[in-house]
Image (tube, rainbow, N blue to C red; front, top):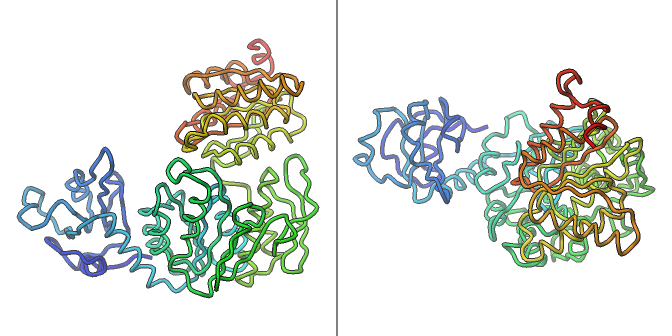
Length: 486
């Protein structure tokens, strides 16, 4: 847990103290001027539209213990600000200084850190790995989505003294970012979930994405293990001289593998074969793709000597993460909130979950654009539609220009292969999505929400959840109302 004086922070990042108290105690790092309080170090990030240096005066009034600044070089330049004991630390680049502080903090952390990256499933795998490790350790894990080049240093600063192991998620949004983060985190072992199409717009090809993801090893010790998805066509070909690689998946080539997989009401039931030990498992999260996440978690737990049956027990209790295949049954409606993000693979997996549900009168897929897929985006959306056409979805509610291609792909597949055509409704706004849900969804329906986070489908999922939770007299969902709206 961060506990440094302003002077110590200044020396750690190679900055200059141009004003304030060098003995002021810093216990937290903040990037958000609206939430700064006593003991905080405020790091103003210069963005495309906003330079957070503009809010330094505000955070000083809020009690910040220290601020980084790349705009101010001397005491004279800050005379216009209110007199304060806050330490002003001049640095060349605030983002770089934050990473330097994160790297210093990492050097003070004695517990092992497990790094997780990949195109799809990072957060769920992080959560499941933490769950499996919790059978033998006090675990700290990345909070929320703090997996970026500014989020990871803050994550390192928040590791509590009582933690015995950490599970750190590492993401990327631009070329070279993952390597920079990895050199800060310096994880003891690393796991890559898959090589998909997320960020292909920036990186150009899956091969380039693979090279970027493998940068998670930068700063990892020579004896650190790399855990790879052995079912991924690119990852299973990875050979790194001098690096121990363990594979997990459903294939015979995997060191930790799943066998005898079946779905019971959408929930995976399977045998996990982990280094010769066979463990029957049933997950509480829906979809066959969740098996890979569980196997990854078991592989890491085995590496750190956790009893595998105890780890499997923890995994069986895991019920998902907000916005990622959260299942809610209320007011007679089954709501699958998988709205946090989307790729072609994860959208197909979500549609498979919806299709697997039994006892539903209708299966409704509310789908929005998948972003960052580059010039192949229309074709990839059409492929999702073709996949959906073979999985008995009754209604598609499509929000966004690219999502419309899902409807096109589904319609063409139905004509070509003789499937019954689903009902397709296009919406131009989230308000229109909400209005459709209000008048058309009824008791007995199952509704999936899936799209890129920037499309905001989480708001539509929350709207339907709130509506379904109300008693019918208060405007909630009832079969009578739904029937009249058809």
